[in-house]
Length: 202
Image 1 (tube, rainbow, N blue to C red):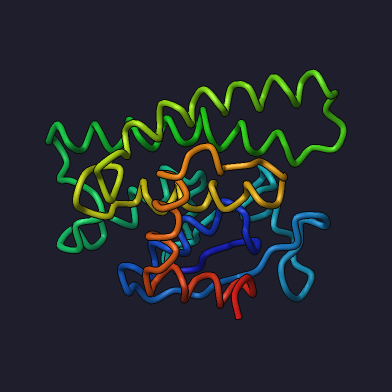
Image 2: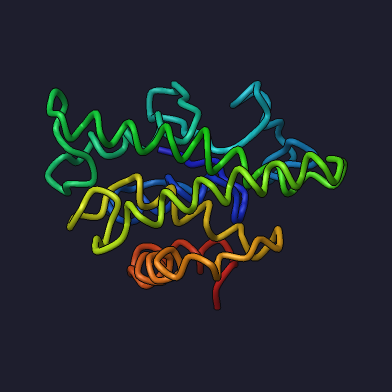
């Protein structure tokens, strides 16, 4: 299996999950500006949408989008417990979290990277994120992870997006619960391994 990634991008999520699961994979770095991989080959041949993450299976098939990839990976090794079993209510709660992170947190934070957005648009994005973080902080109060006592693929995703706050100068200090949560996830060996391999941690 190959993981196509860019350091610090949302492809960090499946990168963390692969390391949590101990699955064999090859990490292929993508230059998002030129849409090429090491050696100069076109990344658009792998993912015509032009962005990471993408995985290439041993049979040559490709899968893209964070939620789809991490669900697939978790199901390769269900005994690891990174996703509840199919058909359970908890599985749908996990999908709920993945959807919330994707649509409400990921997209909001992603907007703040865009230098061309107007000040009004940026402030509207910040206001929306403030509202979402108010709610999210309450959900995490008294819980180590989003689903309770067990780390799941949703935690890998949320940690990834929260790590962008410093880069876009978004202050998380009003939500100490989120800071504690990010610190807890960031201390996991698989997360440290991922950060080091992406050149984000010495």
